[in-house]
Length: 63
Image 1 (tube, rainbow, N blue to C red):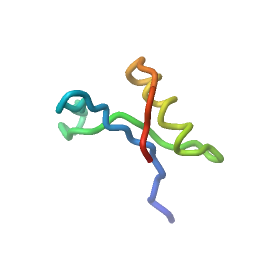
Image 2: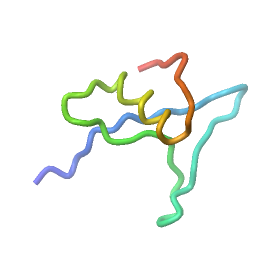
Image 3: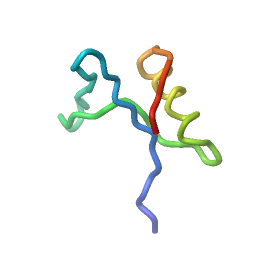
C-alpha cells in the first residue's frame, strides 16, 4: 500500500509576511493547496487549488 500523496502547496508571500491556516480538526498549521489529480501537472494544480480555497488568482509562481 502506498500512503504517499502528491500535492501542490503554495506559500502566499507579500512584504515579509506569509499566509497559513490552522486546521480545526488537528490544530496543525498548513499552507494552502491540495492533492494533484491523476494526470494533472503541479504547475496547473496549484493555481486551481488557490482559486478554490482562497478565491485568489496566481500571477507568478516558482516551482
